[in-house]
Length: 54
Image (cartoon, rainbow, N blue to C red):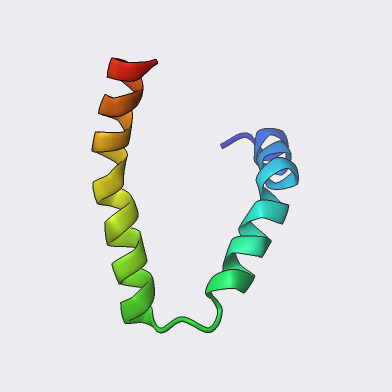
């Protein structure tokens, strides 16, 4: 990635990443894996719902 583009991405998403990291800091790796798995599985039905309903 272009260094300037990478810096823009960090500027925009860095604060959000920090907040997420802080909110997950007290979770175990297994708990984080469970959360990540749920989010992965939620993407498709959410996408379908938006396409069909909006």
